[in-house]
Length: 81
Length: 469
Image 1 (cartoon, helix red, strand yellow):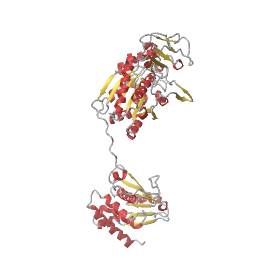
Image 2 (cartoon, chains in turn red, purple):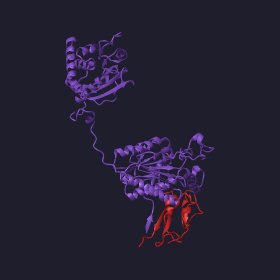
Image 3 (cartoon, helix red, strand yellow):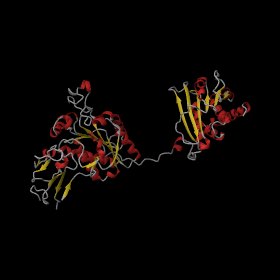
Image 4 (cartoon, chains in turn yellow, orange):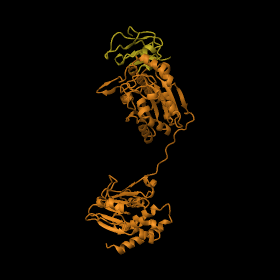
């Protein structure tokens, strides 16, 4: 688990592939928990990509469906027991 | 850990040499969202291997780099026509047409309207972004009144550019479509509705129920000149005023599934003559006979040609019959070209006929000069010959009208001419086959068969008596 919570097996979280992000901001606006934001730094294509603030994700996948890029966002969710 | 991720796409998009994993769409474009919904639905339904998407001209032109299905690219506006062809030749396939507002609502509107009216088994996804995106933001049929585009710089005006075209409402006038809905991808709630509509349209194809149409309002931030969020907001606030969302029609529960098509008759069965006719085999020694028959309409020009072509078919020769006539049913000039050949025929035209049959003077004046050396002209005796035929061309005068009248059927001049052709042996076909074809041409009036056979025999005898071999 990194310092943003990415990699925690127990919690749902979005995983960004930031090089594919075009920085449109639709995921940030759509997130019901407001746990996404636009990064200050640029990605390889020269835009400010979206990122996860590190906590608060509920795994609803709304960011995934609002994202126009097929491979920019995945949402990881723990299996239901 | 369950992972929610894109399904139904190729792993990499080999668009420009180096494989990538991102699309060519502008930031915030609705197309990518629609692609995701569509691909996910196809993957979940397990239909990718039997799905063909007809890709349009427009922003989605590169769709075939993304969705992992069978892909066909159509000429601008012709996606529905191509989809129709695929659906009819591969009835087991799931056919999808994905088009924008230029492709579907402008150049392709008639194709779409007709396909919908025929109830083609096509799931049509119509992406309406109210502008021509790929070409740089010109006015589309779906551009809103007052909306500024490259070609309506002062805003679309109804008295000059007409009103926005509401395609769902237009298609809803038709009887055949099974499902018509308009959805949007402007926000999460709308995206989830779009997801349902897209799946519904695909299910209708899986169940083979008919034409399904889903219009999807999709923001175009670039050409609206708005940021992605404002463009999505514009779709909700402006576009939906003119293009209300909703399901216009859903008769999928009542609609019957398509039955397997009945086996079709073979060409031989369809055109008559039975199935016992042998298919032609190449015979180079036979050569090719070009025959032109000309006269005025009503003289039996076309049926005489048809009888020769049929006789050729019975003789397992290649044959073609190519009529040429005016719009009038009777009295205009009429001619037909018949080719009888030992090898497959390229062109059915006979501009230099080896055999020319002239039933009237204008035909002689017009075509006699085209007959090459060694050719034969067979002319009705009433034709006044003012100009001799070209050198090396034999001219035979046949009193066909006089003989036919003597034999009791003045209309049977063409039967007399057929007998003359048989006597001259210029068609390369056996007399028996010509008689068979003659019988066949009267199969709807069987009592005429013995009469015409009799006329044929008498005319043949006349030729034997009057023409030296």
